[in-house]
Image (cartoon, rainbow, N blue to C red; front, side, top):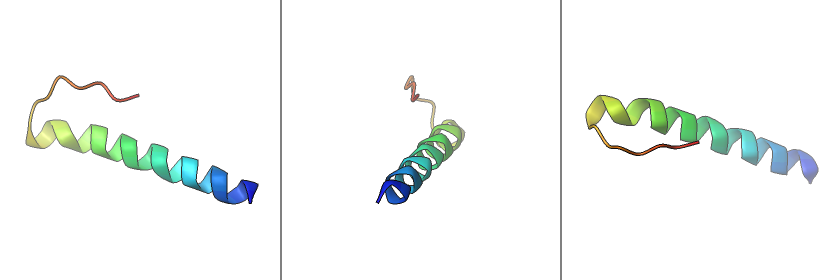
Length: 34
């Protein structure tokens, strides 16, 4: 069960990082995502 939580966290961080890196290419938005 703990492994699923870690996997979900890693997937979420990867998704947020991808969105944060890909969004500025389409439109400039003053939005900081940690």
